[in-house]
Structures are given as C-alpha cells and as structure tokens.
Length: 346
Ligand SMILES: Cc1ncc(COP(=O)(O)O)c(C=O)c1O
Image 1: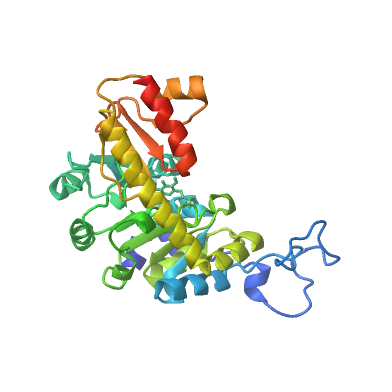
Image 2: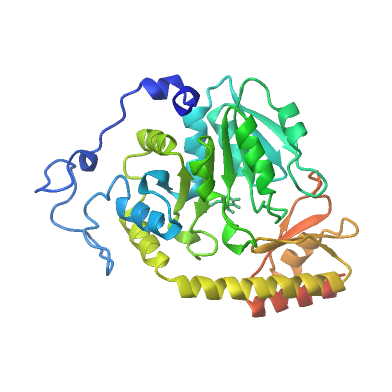
C-alpha cells in the first residue's frame, strides 16, 4: 500500500547519499568539515566540528525503547513541523490534496499550501469530534492524506480512538494523527496501533511536556516503509548533535516529566474552576491549555496584551471558535497574574 501511495518521482528517485551515511568510522577526509576543531564547544556534546549521524540512530533507539516499539518505526525530525512538511512532499502530488479536520493546528494547511497541493477542510462536530460521514463527504479521489490532531489544538479534547481507527480502515490514503499534547491526556497514545494500520502516522514532539521547544525535535511513529521513505527525502543531517544529545538525555528525566505533568494538570483544573466561576465557558481539556469562550466578543486578548503584556491566543470568528481564546497553562504564579487580570477585565 505505501509504495503505491508515495509519489512516483520519489519512489523512482535515487536519494542523496551523505558522507556520513556512506562511512561512519575512519579518518574523515570526505565531508569538508574542519578537522582542527570547533570555534565553540558544549560540555557533553563532543565533535561539534563533525556532521551528526544522518539517521539520529541513538535518539531513535532511545525513543523506541522508551515507547516500547521498534527502532524501524521511528523517524526523528527538526520539530514535528518538519515532518508535517515531509509527509506532504512524500505523498501528495500537485494535482492531489490533503484533508484538514478543523479547527486545528494551522501548519497542516500552510505546509500544504506551501507545497502547492490542494487543501480540503472538514469541520469537527459541535462536540469537537470527527464526524466520519462528513469526512468522507469532504474527500475526493485526489485526497491523499488526512490530518487530525488528538488532543486537538486549540479545542483541547482527545478525538475518539474508535473514529481514528475507522478512518484508518476506510480511507485509502495516509491518516496523520498529531499527538503533540498526548502526554497531558487521560488516554494512551495510539502509537502501538501503527502495527495494525499501515497508513497510520503518529506525530509526537519534545516541545510540550518535555519542555524542549527550543531544541526543535519531533518524531513520527509509523510503518517502517513510511519511515524508509521519510529517510529517503529528508535533508542529510536534519537533527543537529546538540538537539539529539539533549533529547536522549531528556528521556532519562522521567521524574521531572511526572512533576511537570502533575503541576500542569493541577493548574489546568484550578484555572478551569476559577474561569468558570467568573462566568466564562471553559471546554474540557486533555492538553496543557484551555479553550475559553466569552459571552460576547470582548477583545479580551488585545486588552490583556495592551494593558498587562499578558499574551493569550485569540481566534476571531473562526467556525466553532467564535469569541474563544486559548490559554496555555503556565506556572501557578503566572496563572494567578492572568486570572487576576481577566477578573479585572470582565
Ligand atoms: C498540534 C501541534 N503539532 C505540532 C506542533 C509543532 O511541534 P514542534 O515544535 O515539534 O514542531 C504544535 C505546536 O504548537 C502543535 O500545536
């Protein structure tokens, strides 16, 4: 199935072979690096004068072990944003399209438009869940890839696993499920389901619960064929040595992650309660943010930014998000500052 879905030009092309994919050991005279050393160094990350491992094998292995899946099912990217872009370029021809289940993370559409492929959209239902008949009504024979996000940004809810499985069963293209926020959720990742569905691709990231948005590391969990094709088209050295080393180190910090999770979930509950008491509608969240609805358009985001330099995200009149803002859960002290400012405003 995957061979047939991949764009023909990619199936047929010869990939670039980088110096370090050809030779991993020996005395290197092959990559025009600076053998004398590096201008700056970073403790614990040796040989910054040398290109990194093209396949980030240590990182992929550490992730595979952490997740209990095979190394061959993991691809590491420069943030999950890179992988969104690669997936479109891998599967979708210019006369084909992606389907985006909205409202959701804006980059799926932007990446598709940048690649010059078509974009179809389909709305979540009033409970922010996938409506399967409406998804299939919105696809055309040219639809190659569906993007959905669970927990969804910005609505905060998990999509029903049964619906995603049904999509994977019935849709003849690729189903991408972006799980950037799954570590904050009350249900498990669908990552193990890639063994059941050849066309399922899960996206995860170090940018959220791991607190490492600054190092730009995301990963895909998928059928090994998909991973091999992603490797075929990616930039030669897409993950740098520093990011790779830090991501591997992070995976050992289970206690810190557990503490982050504990604090964020407690604060999520507290914020939800306080905002509800102020008369606002707060949607249930399985992520590290809350979607909050105001009774009327009140320009709250603009006012908070202007008067107190407190920055929240506003969605204007987007369908299902009318008069809504998204508030990321921060530290208890920062959350208090925001709560006080909102209370003053309304
Ligand atoms: C749903 C979703 N996916 C992906 C990303 C980007 O992740 P990364 O930092 O790994 O590129 C974000 C960032 O906010 C997001 O909300």
